[in-house]
Length: 119
Image (tube, helix red, strand yellow):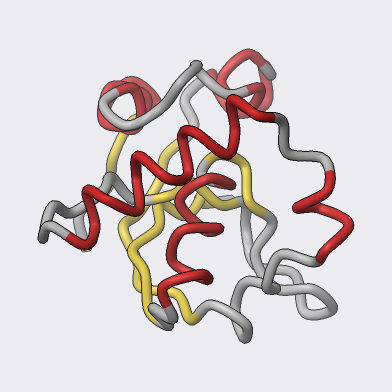
């Protein structure tokens, strides 16, 4: 199992994001935090996005989702999402990658790559 530092994960995330994401400003995810790359199942390990969550997306979010959807359809792989440690009640909590999860959900992609925070 390869272990990634916060800095490595953050650099990979910047390649496909509109912004840094709130998670990278939270000190509990920065100092000496380690991540591993895993495969997660959308709808099982990670809950599907609800209509309520979609309703919070702005016009800019919709543009980003459409842009990412075109990239995925053309065969380009997006950077892995970032998730917190697994919780038995609700699975993995998404720290970064809501747009990518929306794209995968809309395209019917079930398994996706994620950087999981190691406790």
